[in-house]
Image (cartoon, rainbow, N blue to C red; front, top):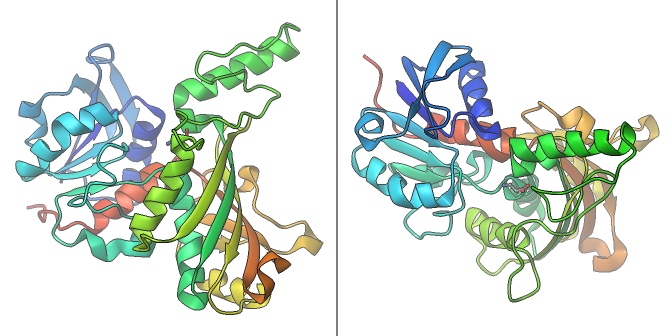
Length: 335
Ligand code: 2RA
């Protein structure tokens, strides 16, 4: 298949290329698109050296599959037009996620929604990591309420976020100067920041509302009661999430562990005696979302459960999920 990655020089774009290769996606020709600034440069990929091109509809309409890792404005301008040309499109931006005619998909949860659609939205990383673990619990015990607190890595803000965290950590440790902020609202080094994306009229941030809006759509639960506090922490990679749920039917930690041990896309890491629980260090580079610290909470009586998740947000939260979607789309069979 002729596959194009649009936004190929960004953190997610680079992961997309690696995931395509790692999962042996049938790529016959890989095209990499980025801004005019990068056009003409060469990127080393598992498919060989590829010259970056500036995006044009004329070039992109020749693709079989376009993986978009660019801004919402770009997606609004081009995603539907590409799909109308017959190109299968997976869009990583938030622009189209809540549009009624665009499925928002995490394959382990609602892969059936892909059907014959040519344009699929990839969810926010925090949401994708959450619903992979929530859905099997919902199937087993029902789900009434969800309260989530996130611990989100610098790479959620792209490659620039990682660069800023490293530079500012050095500034503090090596130069003895206070950290400064450009990408984040405040210095992230030696700090935590309860502010990701813009504040909404209801006091939540857009990141927090994305978790609510998108989880409801993916799980097909428009009335799901869900509240999120999203916090940026000074790690490079992997989003962690502390999750409290109220189920419809009684739940025990043992029963929840048995469910999550078999759930696709989840790796149970829950043996506190052995100090085994999810952590960014172990979840980095892993496809599965780690789940652990599973315990009963008596806030919700015998229907209460607490757990902790860690997911590589560049993989399950972005590139891996996008390629998994593409694998399930009805694409032309290569000659
Ligand atoms: C973040 N979830 O971590 C966002 C990126 N999509 O900033």
